[in-house]
Length: 286
Image 1: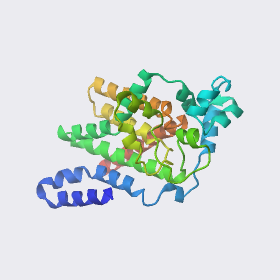
Image 2 (image 1 turned 90 degrees about the horizontal axis):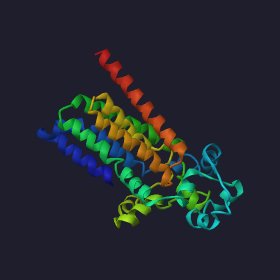
Image 3 (image 1 turned 60 degrees about the vertical axis):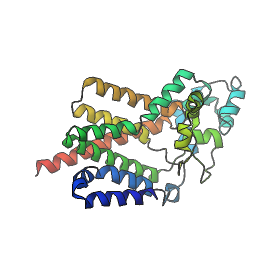
Image 4 (image 1 turned 180 degrees about the horizontal axis):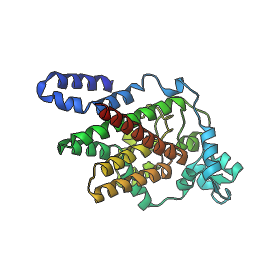
């Protein structure tokens, strides 16, 4: 189990005087990794029922794209075999279904690039803050990032939910132990000849964790702290561009509903506000 190795390495770093200080600084990231890995022990679908259909129906109600399904019938049966009948009945597509049959190589390429930034950029930003001795901002960013993750993990257990690609491929009945799926990101793998996303998503232990979208949250937290720590404007601008790109990619590739993305944004804002309030309360009274 990955978390056991992390705990062991962390304990070794604490025991050695030369690595004790960085170990303490990076504690939030260790807690994040251990908590994420530990969720495998007790999946969220053991706590509450899995939502497949109501989220799909709500997405279609608010963001549905009206269409004549006979125009795209053959394409829909290939791209969305699980939800094709629902599309015909409602005469409407959810955005992810629309993009499953309306996509371009340029958009597919950019989608892959955006999603590859999801975790590396926040981690890289944290390492940059630490390496440049901006430890104050490193700690504020790291603990806020951890809190946002914990709020998101709580959301996973409160409302286990399938992503759009699940309904599009398998229909509306939850099938436990379903393997992860690259969905629209598979086009990036095929285009580049690099099975990056197949490797990442093929080992996904629990596909019923779409709400809230932490994909939507991570770069927003990073962008907020880049602005708060007064990074160069172009750096904050690039982070913001990647952030919006990830929001778009999440829907374009069928990995998240727009609803998931909006809830992920709210989770990020709630986590940052809660952490900053706690931080300022503690510093004001000490």
